[in-house]
Length: 341
Image (cartoon, rainbow, N blue to C red):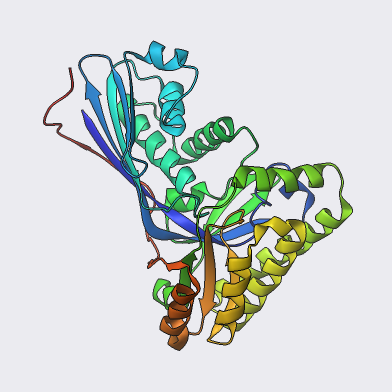
């Protein structure tokens, strides 16, 4: 059997880090706002007759092979830890060949790893008939990622991969809920420039440092997250109303408070990009994910999009062309032409 799956990455607009349990339980109206982009993660999963587990990442140009599931479980280290951990958790009773690819640059902060786990878990779910609903897949994916990076993970990164579109992810005491926002995808993209500044430090560490400060009762961090929570709630309303002036103001405000929480979230190049694009028609900007490098989202006046992009390239970053991905993860079974062994 052959299973083919793919899921999109995302750009986060407001409320990031709040989605790490239990931070959001301490802030009113906690939510995150994001949108899926057409940078995809893909998985080609095939059964084998010989019982071997073959893992291959095209974007990382790495491959490893195990004689059996038991051999994979007994390995002390992996060249492809994410693929190996998903295979270990789903425990296929037959040999499998896993071939993946990600269109997210290394450390981009657009949730390439989270989207890839949703893709892999969805493919294994179909192959093995596990019967997980999409929310259960999210929980499995989030727990797998926490095992890999060894610190708590947030929930928001999985929802664009699950559903696509523009979303508010409500972080409530009675559970997490994704709400689609009625935003024109064309209008949003006309105002979007996404720049890649290079691979950052470990995002899991950045988020964990802030989480520890919050749990330890740091009053300044707690106050900043109160502000970020309020900004995210307001961003949800402004985006849903297509009030782009207010979206821009909130984006600038969110970036200001986020830098106070974690000064390492920015870099000299990011600061320079924000500065030089402001006069050219960028009305707001923020780092994607935990920062320290990776991608920066710029909200621009539509007529200034090309001009802002040119300045970003001149300053040494790379503009990533994107569209809103309207759908989340897709999975299909196809007739395999052949199996290994």
